[in-house]
Length: 239
Ligand code: ADP
Ligand code: MG
Image (cartoon, rainbow, N blue to C red):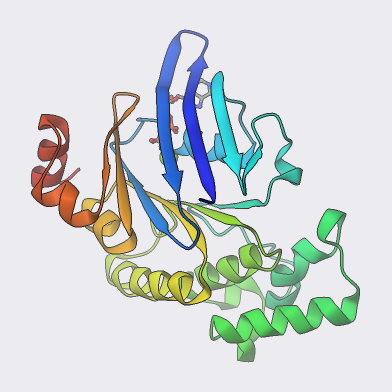
């Protein structure tokens, strides 16, 4: 088991975002976290990444209690909706940025080697010298993925990564990203409010609503055997 949440709760002043969340994620698995807007998906990812403190409960990653460990020390990367590439840096420099400073610091030669290796994997090695604004939205997402993976994170958290893409691109890139993550054996939590996307991306789906996991199961289980009305409603009507 690579990641475990134990009774995790988050309260902002007078708002309880989620309560007593429990889940275990196995190494190499992709878990889709799906739920309506405002249900706390981003807050949960930020908590796992260490950017937000949980109010109670424990977060384990790689078997270690990470609940009170700073974000920089967690073997986790969080990818946002917008790729947020540095506009003034080349694609290769963007990808290798995580190896320039801090605990993952590497010499220039190794940075370039690893950067080009990852760019090859995401099929962008020919564009390494370009700048972000010379790339399409889908290509930028692939750069962001390469940049996230360069530090060899144990866990990748994706927060609605395809939201800003047009529908057609969205359909093609999600399949590509899923195949890529599976091929690389990456453990990931994939957040979406789109039912179809959750079904396609996840080995398992965690359905979040009203501050709780309403059900955690395979796409088939959640779709065919919803545990309760909430899940049935979300999966029959979409979100
Ligand atoms: P989702 O990603 O599922 O759309 P969020 O995690 O962004 O939901 O937000 C969950 C709830 O927590 C929302 O009601 C939001 O307004 C609230 N919230 C998020 N961040 C803060 C914050 N820093 N302070 C107070 N309330 C917050
Ligand atoms: Mg969100």
